[in-house]
Image 1: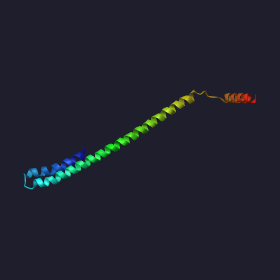
Image 2: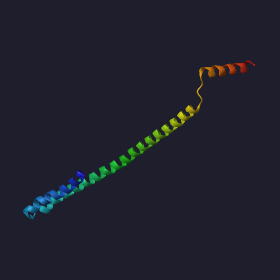
Image 3: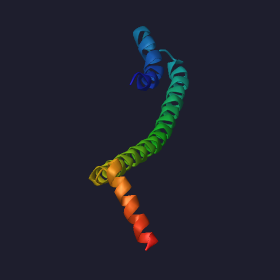
Image 4: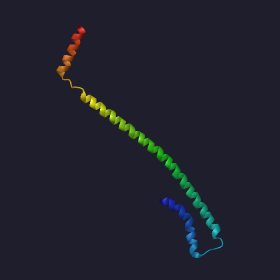
Length: 108
């Protein structure tokens, strides 16, 4: 916001200074240089602002994609955790019976 005021002050600063003294014959030619400098500064500020807007959009897209990936990863892990919790827990005796049953089936 303050940078925008610089281009205004470049043009108006000399005009305010010379306005108190009254008009002089060479005043217009001196103000032209300041007007040109104000125009150049305003143009450079506009170009810089445009570049910033393009960069900011790309950065926003990257942040959005990263957030989407994080959300998907959390959802996958949450569903995986629910499935793991749904599997019945085997005790040591259950594991031994299961292994013994498989061994008997293979032996027959």
